[in-house]
Image (tube, rainbow, N blue to C red; front, side, top):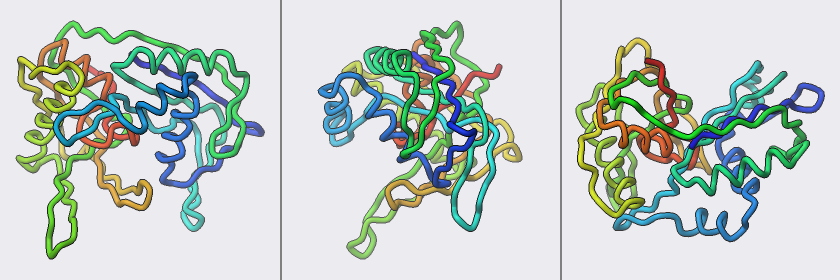
Length: 246
């Protein structure tokens, strides 16, 4: 399921750090109406081996804005649109209830009016589509070097990029359904020139991701799962959300 909420900041000004995914993640958790559910997601999640998945993702904020490079801030100056997706219907319904019952909400200590809340169930007729990223897709591997953990982020043209997206999908799918997906999950960039590199931070960790257009080829059921949970890593930190464009 996917929730889209439209908000307007008081006095048409919402200032956030340029790297505001952490603020949005906290905003999402605080907006869940059942604290036990929020605690389960935050502290436990769904397990596959040593890996943990929250099975939700969210987009960037969309709306008119200004960048203040020296202050490392972004200011939204009008109506803002935000998307949240999850295979967990309870999560989307709790957010829907919270936003529908609230005239205003607090994001990073600032007030926003709720203008509109929309929820759509996910249904795919086909398995091959062109997609556009609504938040950066990130693919990485972590290893030890000289007794220190290192993280390497892969670029879309790298042969490891689609392989790791496939492996991540298999793990997420297994964590939720307890089984292995029947079909491959193939993701490939459509045009290298249409991709843009995004370097951001989350709780002090530097993360490299990519915005742009890709092609996905899998089964309709598996595509719907990926639409709800995101592709690549760090989905619950605001990475890997996409929309269907063709």
